Amino acid sequence: MTANLKETVGRYGIWSRALHFGDPSRNGELAEVAAELEELGYGALWLGGNASARDAAPLLEATSRIVVGTSIQSIWEHEPAASATSFSELDSAHPGRFALGLGVSHAKFAEQYRRPYSALVSYLDALDEAGQPADRRLLAALGPKSIDLARERAAGSIPYLVTADHTAASRERLGDAPLLAPELKVVLESEPARARAVARDYLALYLTLPNYTNNFLRNGFTEDDLANGGSDRLIDAVYAWGDETQIRARIDEYIAAGADHVALNIVDGSTPSRESLPREAWSKLASLLT
Image (cartoon, rainbow, N blue to C red; front, side, top):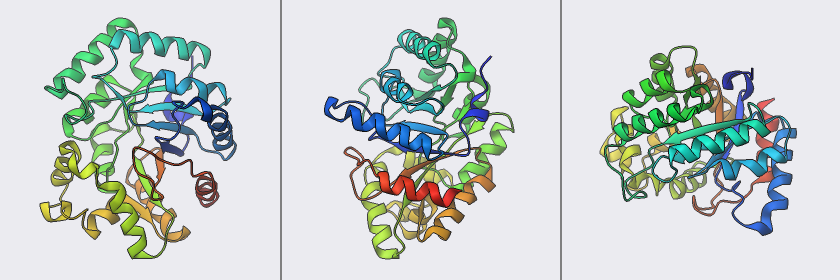
């Protein structure tokens, strides 16, 4: 019997799109980075974007302890039977260290996007039928219905682009047992104008996606907050930025709100589609978490 995800992911992890093994010329570096992040004490690596078990496998092979999860695997691009088979193969090779993070993605990226909640329920039904264990899957849950689904049909929730207030509401709805592991963007910059400029550049894509903007509106923000790259109030609510003390305090807000684990996403000026491997920043971040 493997330990549950809540016990194995630890308090902090790294969220990054750049950890995908898509470019063979970078495979050696990525394996080295994965081992380095494990040595730094992070408990999990979250593969940003539409990742899969195939992306997770090399990172697991390069490490011995750290959990690797998809954040997220789109239900529109991966058949449930194939997902269950891939999960089984990877879990057999690395017991308890792979987490299947699932989500409905966005209409902008999935031509077949229809009735996302119903489609997710059907996907989970098919995973159950194929034998993929519910306690090794997680859902990217933003709204109340999907949070309920994460409680009832998965090991918990891995929401992206949420506030500490959303984290508190998610914890209340999930109850104590499920894992709650929100993503949090971090800008290692203490000058307010520069920090917010970097944050806005990165946030621009997400402010075109209704799943995120609707969630902001549900959680007390206004259309004015979403305009012109996002208000200072919005930026400050979804980013940790400032000096080390300020950044640690923002991360602690999410823990105090009920997060079991925080997936930390370094934002350094690279675009969401072509992110860097900010090894120095990951090391600096690890030092302020101890």
